[in-house]
Image (cartoon, rainbow, N blue to C red; front, side):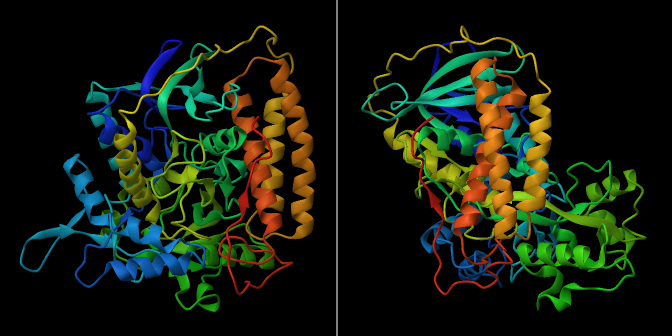
Length: 534
């Protein structure tokens, strides 16, 4: 990537959403796609479960819609849910055509059909998967297709610094004209111009001490959009995955919900089940209920973890259904075929994000947001299992169709200044960055986690304001680094989460507070509006 490069489309992020969009638009446009790490280092790559889609004759679109609305606790937009769910079958076939090999099973008549699993919140088996490494299969296939396409230029080890908008340039037309991009290899900031810019940066779960996400999930797209003047919605709804492997060396080791879907039971250290005491669906209750139940049992009993037990199934069943999980657990000394696995909840998915319309357009013209970075109205107050990959694929289609219509419109690219480092120096106190990073993630876990109170939120808010002051001063005096950019974004996202949580005077979906334990009769989104662009 060279300074002052100009593209039709700049896609920031290389997960399933960004790659799908690039492949849809590549025949018509010149595309640059940047990836913070390697091209495969995205949340999509780590998704184990699968993609929800109505493929079984006993299932229906109406059932999938109903399950999604129920899980969303009154905050889903029904028209968006209907539009996305309707894309399920087409999205699966599209991936199949791109070379993704999904797991099949033989029917009674000998013909093959997709093997479907059932996960929390679903009333039918409708999760299409590639063994227990669906994201891996999708990411590998899409990356290979993108590498082979002559109109897609892929840049790994690049992180966006900030978006370039008309407001920031002093123009009346507040359109997005690209972004400043930090090359992690050369440690230089590059100006990249584009007619359309798409945020596909994923979520913000690294705001928390314990997370199932890779290190790149630092809320970059949400923070950049907020600084540029976009509205952000429902940031209080952070989904904590109920089951991550509990081991000091098992970093980000998610234990798929499919294990519970295939009969796995949650137990206390003595082997006693507890989920039937919390919900009629027991282990298959929606994720927020399961995560809260585990959190409550751990705090009530003073235990470090609970256990997920599927060893009542045959070894052959476990090894064939969960080959990667089986191998991973063995590395840490746990044999799924013989014993229960120690698990704890961890921050997993950001249900809120940048407000978009049904075509993924944000508040700023020519700026789009797709995937976990966006708040589309699909997930409401709680994302249902395996709807996230479906959202990525569906909104990549919606955004592509919208951009295609606008591609041939005349856009005058204004004069945009190069990145200026003449007034800053190299840092002489880099210890501030990792220290503040650790402090932020720890108090977010302690005060803004699965169960909240007004006092905890106020404590977090005070600490965030102190960190913001230190980070802003540091950012203004020293050259940017990857860690500084991520910390700056994380503290912005933390502020948005806390402010959203303080505004919601009820417990709904993923937001549970001891001060307002009941759900209000009417529901509404928490929408934050920036006071100014930064």
